[in-house]
Image (cartoon, rainbow, N blue to C red; front, side, top):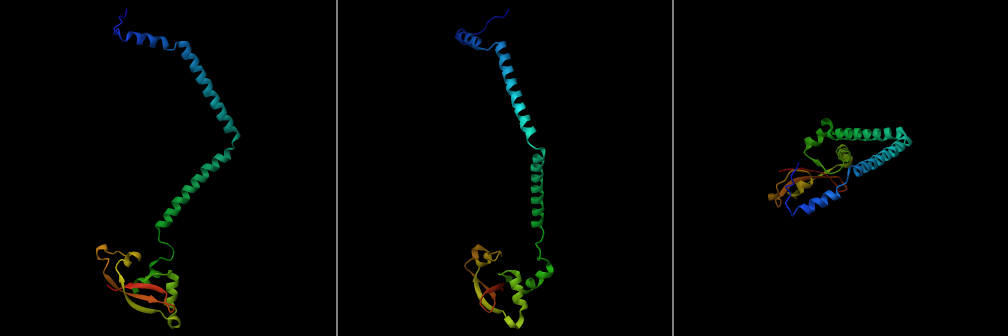
Length: 166
């Protein structure tokens, strides 16, 4: 025997809730309906899977794996020295102190031309902020100061390289 300890003011709400609560037969009907829907969904998926060729799925996975492998390979190649950046080729540029401003093959061609197409050296002063454009470190507090430099020019007046003197 259970005693009802519900306060009087809550009793009408409790009775209304008990009246609205579904019975066991309603629960069973709802469960059967949901089970039938789920089985129909699985049957449709099986039909789709049977009509889709398996090679297409394998191709999709294979192309994804191939793309990932290519990305890893390209990343590894970017971390390595680029071709032509070996120390044997870069030594003449580094030993001269000039920073090429044109493609390296054009710079080397100008140096190798000898007397037929001599290069000119022009002393100049550059604003220190230009060092940043050349990829060199510079102090922003001293950006208004001038830097002594030499420009390497070809006979047509094109600047091939720059050498910072101070």
